[in-house]
Length: 170
Length: 390
Image (cartoon, rainbow over all chains, first blue to last red):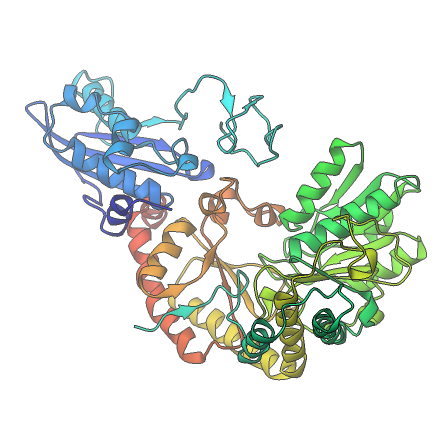
């Protein structure tokens, strides 16, 4: 069900942990909605010198976090802001279709951490405060059943065409 | 490294006697049981034997057994079959919030054609109060469908008490016994149920074959329509190989019942005590005493179950998880939520189910590996860090 790259990053996650004196911290999601990713940054001369993560979530969420840290490390902040959730999924050689919306929130956590760093520089935030953002899945045009691709109403519990259970957010 | 298989709710290894019986039928008998010549009759005889063996497991009469393609078909047949048969009597059905998806999705479909469904709450152990069933019955009620034992937390429902109420109010009672049949003793006459679903893969029989017990005189429309097979209740040429496997599995479950129960109970006790001694912040789910003997449902705080299951698999230990992420639907387990558990804790739930072949040494393997694996994931978890920091 997972690609070999996803399994590798899940089983041997890179850059797990916290940075005690992080320059920026981003926190996305919460355990109630399924996945939660915290990203910690150490920044020098506008470059991400070190990055670490902590994640509550499934195999995909952990692999996404790990791959994200590899993509972001050594990049300038402006370069890092260009990394999208889609890029992370592509670097992992794809994620199962039903995980693309719920578990693929690594880039959101990175962007939140960068914003937190910049807010601290501008004295809009203080050290120790994380930039917290709720997990809002990527907007798609309309709501489509992930199994049969038929259009459904926003809050439908099951697909009107094939009867499949629909995720909370679709 | 030998692999430890502890997901016997998903499927069980075939009993050696089941393999033997299935080998024999594959080699020797290909006929269609509906044919009156010798080839057909050889197959029909094999079906007869399997029907007697399956009936015996339930203390039913052989003619009350309908073979199906498994638990899901049995449940679909019972629910939709009674609903359609009783369509002029009423359109109200009673169930619980923690039934298997095959029950809930059948009822969801019936809602689309104007059936009213009352879905009863259970307590924190997953137990249903029979008085709630009695209160819910109206003059429109045509069916009560309540599982015998829950497949995620193991809680066993007071079916005999519910059956008394159903009988008194003249409502048909179906019990989904897929998780229970072949594991705990069942006597359909003593229970006094009208319909009961079971599946062979729960007790060392093959996947994709099951049975529906239909008490004589129960109103039931066929689900699969066509020929006159299975006493006109289930059309289609029978899966003779699978049914022979089911029959032998039923016979062995009956013969070995005493030994298996003793083994399950001791493995279960050992696992629960061992995990409790080694890992803090665990919650064991299901009723403390009214519970399936071969099933342990444990919620591990601060982590998510799919990761735990994958890491255990890496260590050669196969278990199941009830986390939303692994369920395919991405929704939290309706059973755990139905017992009042919060979503985050439900996410960290493992389901461990024993079979007749499991050993104490295998439980020791799990006990040795699990603390390390849980700690790896907790060290990665932002909520564990917060909780430890207080």
